[in-house]
Structure formats: structure tokens, C-alpha cells
Image 1 (tube, rainbow over the protein chains, first blue to last red):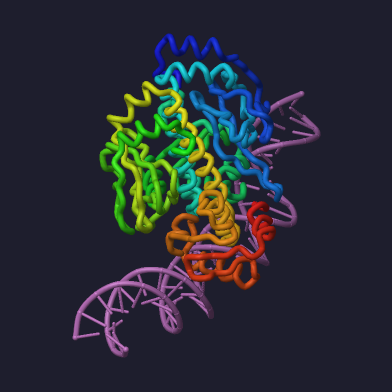
Image 2: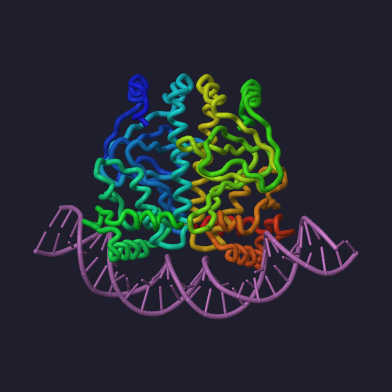
Length: 214
Length: 214
DNA sequence: CGTCATTTTGAGGTATTTCAACGAAGGTGG
DNA sequence: CCACCTTCGTTGAAATACCTCAAAATGACG
């Protein structure tokens, strides 16, 4: 978000917000609690999830730097957000933000753009999760990370800040299925794990092909 | 969208827009074509879809009255939109809309709210599609319709403007699986089909239970 | 270096997909 | 008005892929 803002807008936003840094596993807010603020991730990674009556947990989205989160529905947060590792984010009280937006259509436009991107990403995910094959789903997950992570590292190497089980909850698979998918992709030399949280893409074109043929 | 706008805002929006009415199966715009306008559904129903390299078609969302569609990505539409039946919608050129939004933060806020709702709906869908059971997916689909269709009819009877095969493409199932799911729900007296496009909910609580235990 | 959590691997059960054929509905033309 | 055709919907049977349960291996951390 901040990238395209004018210095003045940045200043206003920052003046409204509280910068917060927390360790991993910190819960930013819980599903159903009154929504008083919205948030922007500055550094780190978080997950947004919901626990279902059946006991299963579904992860709706992973959040990375520049992502906006905490948009309410009827004044309450619709899911729980928790940090995956040490994370810095800005907390902006809605009461303070709303009047500013009312005054600054440009700034509001940035928020609109941001939410539109989130919408696209959610649609992409629905597409990915609709696939039968576990490998196909996992590859789309990698593609999603490629798009969102811009940590300088050359896109050939990706950091996965989340566990296999969290990936499974995101993709609607069992964690065993995720493990078998990564195993097969590794055996076929498409990817290679430096360690469980660092993957190297060996055959980008093959990956693209698997992702494409939905 | 229009519901909450002031008369003046409605007037402005209408003055910018072209009201269009078309028969079923009319393509409003195609994936990848330059995006010059956004649209608001006024009456009827449409589908937004993408054809995948594999030949399969995935429906991203169904559109009903008051729904906004045609938000571009990099100046191009990201999917194809087609009417399911006789439909009326408003076409608003972006070039004309943008300056108005720049002047009217309130109006822009409505768009922001609208897109946020779309985002929620997309997330809900991703959740639904993540389910293993075909019956579970179909029930969530019915719930989605209940939320969106407000055609006075008492929520006990729902009109499905789309075909089984379109429902399948939306849920990520084969159309046979959809057919078997509806068949089973019918046999168990949870729903009843007056005709293939009109369903009556017989056991609302049972339906809720199936939908809940994701 | 030991303990706990995470990840991987194995075998059987179950649900959906696929392939195929049948039945029903709607539209068209004779 | 009926025959024909195309689309849509239903049903059956075998193949496939994931889920569950269970146990072993690896990695993380104090």
C-alpha cells in the first residue's frame, strides 16, 4: 500500500497508526471480537483462519508485507489472525481512519485497489482448491507465494514461513497429502527442499505447466 | 449498491451509465479484453468464468441484482461474464466514473464496501470448495443463494437460474456428483425439486447442520 | 544431548471421477 | 401435430486419489 502513496499521505497514515512488533504465535485479533482497527503488515507473515464446528481449521489467507487485514463485517472481525513468526504491523483505529478517507479520495482509492487485489487472490485460491490433485493444489500455492514474496531472493528460492499442516489447512488437504505431494515433486526434481521451510525451484517451466493445466 | 446512495448520487451514477437489457447467453465481456467499463447488475443473473487450458471451465461467481462486476487487473478483464437469462445491467465507463469518485469519497466508500463483501463471499466459496463431500459443497451453494437472492419469495423456495453443469463448474465437482448430491438430499427429504430450476427447502435446520459442520 | 513437535512413510477405506448409456425436456421443421 | 435433434439430467460400474489410522524418522530447541 505505502509504495504508491505520496509522502504526505504516508505521514498521515503513520500519524494515525501504532507500529507493533510481536513474536511468532501472537494473536492479533480473534474471530467475532469487535472490530476497532484495521491493520497493515509491514514485515513478517501472518495467517488468517477460522475454526470449524467439526474441529478442523481452515486458513483463509496468509498475509505478507503490504497486505491489509482486519476488514470487519457488521462491526466484528470475521476470522482470527495470528503471526507465523516475528512480525511488524501497523494498527490503525477505524474511528481515526474513516474521517481521513472521507477527505482524501486518493487514499481511499488505494484501499479500494488493495481490496480488489485481495479479491483476485481469493478467487485464485478458490480455483486452486477446486482442483482434484494434491500436487496441482500445492503448485498453485507455490505460485501464490512467488507472487507475494518479494524478499529480494531471486524467486528461485522461496521461504515457507508456515508448517505443512498450515499449508494443508489452507489447501483443504490432509497434511499427509501435502507431504506426499512435496515428496513426489522432489523425487521428480521439480523442486528441492534445502530444509523444510526453504524450497528451491529447479524446473520453473515444469512448475508453470502443472499450475496452468488446472 | 444503489440502496444506500443519496438521490443525488443515484442521479450522478445513472447519468454516467448506460442501461442495457439482453437475452440469456449474451456475453458482456471476455477475459483478456481491454477493460473500459464497470457494471452493476440490475435484474437477472450472470456468471463470471474462465476456461482453463485443460478444457475445463471454472465459474468464479454468479452475479445477482446489485452486484458489481468488471473490475480490471492491469487494464484488462480477468474473466468472461455471460448472462444466464434475460438480464438488465448498468454499464459505467471508467473514464467517466473515476473523476466522480475522486470528488465524492462517500460514493467511493460504497464501492469499497461492495468489493469487501465480494471478498467475503469469495472466501466463503473457497471454504465451501475445500470440503470433501459433494453434499456439503452443494448445501453451501444453496446457502450462498439464500444470502444473495432476496426476491421476496420466502427463502423456502429458491430459483436456480443456472444448470447443473454450471453448478458443478462453480463447486469444482463433476456434474454427475452434483446430480447425485441433489438426488440424495431429495431422497432424504431435505429439499424437493418442483422442477430442475426451482428447489424447495423442506428441512431448514438439517440444511444448516450440514452447512455448518464443514 | 535429550525431549517434543513436525514431517515422512505405509496400508486400507471411502468418496468422487470417468466412461458410458439412458431418459427427459425444449426447440425446429416438416 | 408429430418426428427429429440437441441439450440437460440421471443412473450404473470400475478406476483413481485422497483421508484416516498408525508408526517411524527427522528436525527444532532448551
